[in-house]
Amino acid sequence: MDLNLAKGGSPVNLTVELRDVAAGVPGAQVLAAASVPASGVPLTAAHAFVAIPFPVPGSVTAGTQYAIVAYTAASGSDFYYWWDGGPPSPYAGGMEFVPVSSPPVAPWNPFPTLDFRLQDLRRSPC
Image 1: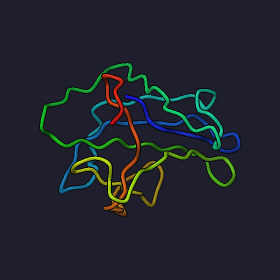
Image 2: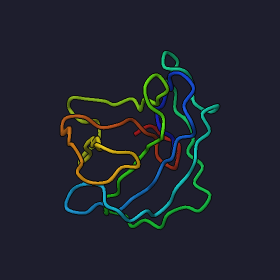
Image 3: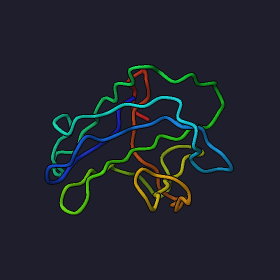
């Protein structure tokens, strides 16, 4: 999958996880994880779709909701930005959540009219 990302400053690597969904929010079960080097993410003004290379793909089932969770230890002027879309959310059943901690755990703050931009495994825009 590809995520529409940008960075500011000099952040450390970005962790991206495919997770289950529990009670309508990202769950704790990590199905796949990848580390994206900061050098592979463009600066904020030049945001672009960045390939997320899961070394071991997660097992997924058609019709099941999953969460894509991205986080880093970066702070202050060193950050990542995942471009979102909406309102309305560009994906049926999709919703943007922002955690209050990193690495992210519940509680999750929902933004029901927004969702983050991505491309699916077939490299077609979503």
